[in-house]
Length: 504
Image 1: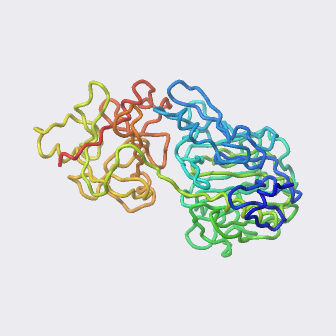
Image 2 (image 1 turned 180 degrees about the vertical axis):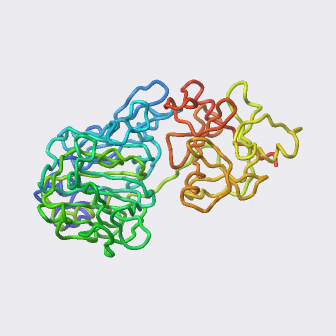
């Protein structure tokens, strides 16, 4: 089966599958198939999940002309061609429109439609994810994950081959263990076909976050749990399972699997080590038998509950209940992919502790700088002859990002302790209250200016949205979105700022 070169430096997984240290010969779905539980859905924007897969991994749409492009692996079984995306999306914004199913069953994930909860788009659909919000490397090669902000979701309601009723299934997903919140529900897995809550046991999906309305684990979270509809379960009971630990590895392997009156939660560091079992046992009361419907979702709950956030890199659903040995081999494969972080910023370099001013680049507005009047962040005409007060209001101290140290936060020079943050997509100057929400809302990631000048400054938690001045007020705006300040006209100019030395 393997050529002699592929046997060099090889080691054997639990199932006897052979990989090399430089090239994985069998992908996760090859491993599941060898274990008798083949993939019926396989989604990833970072890599191929079959050794022979060379088709499209995902599709992106750029904001400049709404043209789409499919992104494939660099080679069969390999890492996504991030360079092709970067070239296609240069000097504009891009969204992920389709996450293709690699199993051959056509279970592609697309923009989630309205459900019990409506999406934020004018037609009730959920938002699409930024194509550039979650850059990573795999074995040193750049790729992009799916950064899910609140309001973002993907779904496939007419899936082929997924488990229904009480049939057995397995699932794994690789998430960012540091990106989560306490809202419902950051899920990947099996859900209702109607996008509404049709009753207990009609879902079986992986959940990750700190929601405590239903079940929860030990510590303060986040936890891997199972969304079985009308409850998030950490174990057999409806509340605490002390064996389900707080777990926040930067790259996190999450597993949920179920068969008649048996299910399990497992997890581990996706960058090293093995999986642990946090629950394995009988179904909760009222959930035996199960009534799974077979739809597939990502980033939302079964009724389209879309308040959660998280980052997805890869995941699959199987036919049948995978053995722990099969999952051990899959985990070893994931570890061998060597997920690692990479820079979230580009463009003009910022120095922590420095004072900067942000100058508009839109023709006719280049005398304006981002400043504030009380708590309102706006643009004002500022020059060397302006008053000391105005100069201070238009100057910002650069800090390491309060919510993510790979990005930045901007403190007012004249109001120490107050930072630019967004609230309902409006930029405000507020005092730091020390909360996780404030820290994330006050964290921004500069990148090369969309109009070729200076920097465009995107919100870390909403990477489709950038600093934008509109009628001299500032927002975090998306290119062509539903808000009045999202207008596509002049977006690149309005969302690009020259980074100058602060006036004060």
